[in-house]
Length: 299
Ligand SMILES: [Fe+2]
Image (cartoon, rainbow, N blue to C red; front, side, top):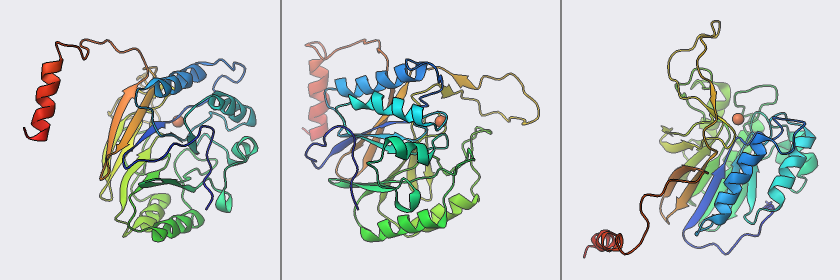
């Protein structure tokens, strides 16, 4: 299986590695404005990654790369990513469209027409899944995709494997942004993964909010969007009766950092903005740092 990558160069893998995640970019929400709000938010997150003292080894973009699935928006995306020094690996979401994606990103293999691929990331294997069902907001997973996944699991049943998929196959408590456990695609995904004991994390998007849960015994995290977020409201919603609740909020653009420590994935979440710094690592903080680290060593 070929390994697509775009556009930065991959460094030499070490036993630990750092995976950055950005999701729900929704470029092209303002079709006539290339300098749109969502582009600025994407740029802010990419700049944050590039300015980190420890740079991520790679970036996963977990779907809803564009808002309307049109070729022009993917062209915008390609331009936005072109200067990025860190390799970016895309995944498709419900706002994406495979044919348009393929026009602008022909370097990605699409077995059976789906954007599913394995990434050989040193100590880890990352499997990017395609849960897009064109014409539907919710997820999809057909027999062809499930067969591909089963084969990949069988290829390396012991190697620590991270799954990336746009749609989290779980109930969220947010009534208009949720899945039901017995939806066909979820049953198929569950079957494809039955018996797999090497899944160390499932990284999702779609909800536009940060979330963590367990699915089929596996840790599943949802990264909040770089585009505006879904408001946190877990009260019942009536599909026939608008109640003027907040639905979309423009908190700062979000991202996740998933650190593989050699035996587990540790997920951190943050927003790309200037934080208010209350303490720095200076001579006043040094005794505390030294004490904590000595305790950690068992001194
Ligand atoms: Fe989205």
